[in-house]
Each structure stands twice: as structure tokens, then as C-alpha cells.
Length: 261
Image 1 (cartoon, rainbow, N blue to C red):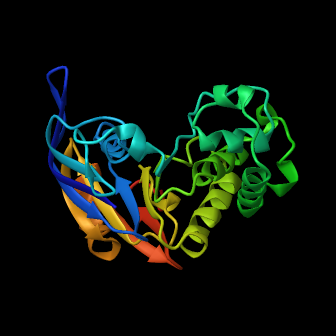
Image 2 (image 1 turned 90 degrees about the vertical axis):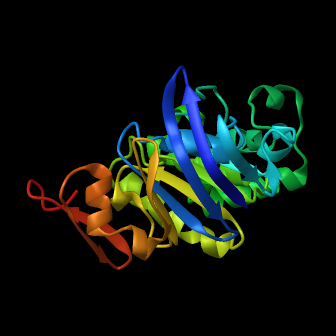
């Protein structure tokens, strides 16, 4: 689905990523972790065909960036960013429908088909928002918006779903509801490959299969989750001694200052 080989990204003389390589297969659920400034969002942008590497190659669905019109690829890649600036007075259903074109403006001069509306409503219900389908977008909580944006990203039936810190700004209840719905994706979309960016291990659903640790633009570890998410690996990645534990598929971090983070 996604592949990076020896990727460097240099912007304004600053090296943001250096020597990054990984391969993501259908159905795999990846976590991309690291401290602020590690290069996580930049790598996600490369995997989403939103920018090109300075050196190395990135392939999305078997097509190398630079050799294909990236607009042809982006419709197969769902991208969820909770910092989405959308503040328009549309209903939840209308916002989800904009996922077909990726822009609100098209909705002003486009009439969705009955099938498209049906699929939007199915996803809205699947993400636990069936009772809010007619609600004005501006009245939604941050957690509800996050789940609606996932439904929006899934509407075009993408082959890849990228989630850029989807739990940002959520309270405990909103975070747990989000994780619950992310956990259901391997069942509802078994061939979908996902990549979730976060600083916080407690935000990872139990269904994560693989992980990448980034620090200072370099990849410290990559592979099956049990071999990557270790106390030693997280200590090296975040630069602070920790003990990592896992219970019922969920991770927790213990440090000398805090029992759980």
C-alpha cells in the first residue's frame, strides 16, 4: 500500500527526515510515535501524497511520487486531521458528503445521489453519530467532530486511512469513544491500511499491528508492534526513562514522576 525507501526531507536548509524506510501492507494498522518535532506529520504527508521527498522514493498504491499525478492517488487516501478549519453551517451529513470531493465548495453546486447519501448515513451511524446526522456542524463537540471526520474520510472507500493526532483536544470520554471506533475498523474495513500519529501510547487502539518510532527525523525502530513498543524503545524515543506495560491490549507508561501517562 505505502512504501518509503531512504527518504530525506530538507526544507529551508533544515533536515526534517533522514534515511526513513518502511513498507505498509493492506490491513495493517500502524502507529507513528515520537516527540514534538520528530517529523511525524511530515512523514504522514509523504505517505498521503501531499508532498514529495527531497531524496529517496515514496510509493503510494504502487505509484512512485514524481511519476504520477498525485491527485489520482489522493482520492484513495483518507486523511483525518482534527484541526480541520471547517466552521461552515452545514449538517453532519453534508460535511461527511464533502468527503467525496474533499472540499465544501463543491457541495454548493452538487446534488449527491441517493446511494451517496445512504453510504454517508451508514458511516455516520457506524461512527456512533446516527442521532446527530441533521445537527449543525458548529454544535458538535470536539470528539463528535473527530468521528465525523473519520466518516468523511471513509466515504470515498479509500484504501489507506491516515490519522494525524486524532485525539487532540478530546476529553477522556471523547478519547475512549474514538479509540473504540478505531478498534472496529479492521472488522468493518479489513483491507484498509491505517497510520495513526500520536505522542501518547494510551491513545492507541488494541488493534495496532505495527509501529514506527521517530526522533529528530530519524527512524529508531519499525516493525511489529510488540517488538517496537518496548520500555527501552520508548525511553530512547522520548529521552526519558519509562516502564511500558500493556493490559487488555492498551498501553500505559510509568515514569519516576508519574505512575501513568
